[in-house]
Image (cartoon, rainbow, N blue to C red):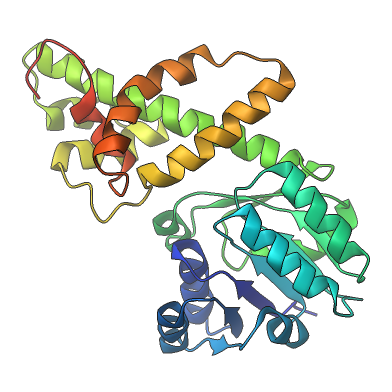
Length: 289
């Protein structure tokens, strides 16, 4: 039997998932502390819930997409006071593994089966069914959730014990930063040799030297349109902290990652609501952008 889905956190990603589910004429429950987001969710045809507790009582699979570890703690405490027997909780936010582990301990006592399940992909990619979910925890629970996640993600990957999902998500986000900076430098290098941005982007895209970030962010670098952002600098700044903390714990030096932030930091300081692609305008070089 298909799991009914409820989403706690109706920001860009939560809204995108809700939109996909409603386009498929599937029911979805939602909760957010923002009244505006709740109204937008209801406009999609979603069933708005007055609280996380009401949502948990209404569906089988609770998906959390939260902005902070403080929010995760608050939700886990609320859910921990319920009877969660037979219900699944997928924590899909990009947050510290210690905070997720604490939430697991809290909700497991109430009977919930919880997985660490971060989603790789932007809200735009999710709307296009191009995102991936990395599920980690009990394999049987992951397999039970696969059909539900298949309704709004392109790939459902079981990656191991609880926390492995966040580990691979941090690797993925590390590559997003490095590949975006590399794409920006490559395009600027082409400009320095007399090529325009569109020519560099068109000729490299689809070839062996290309990358997803070169093609996606490179298109924005060509257009010069950085808002509305599909990947905000503010989110990258938050993820940078998580990546650096994980690297420190692992005893590994991220020299390439740190170098690319010489440009990102300048862009973040000016306006952290811009898309990552704007880093092309913050590279230090001899060419004229």
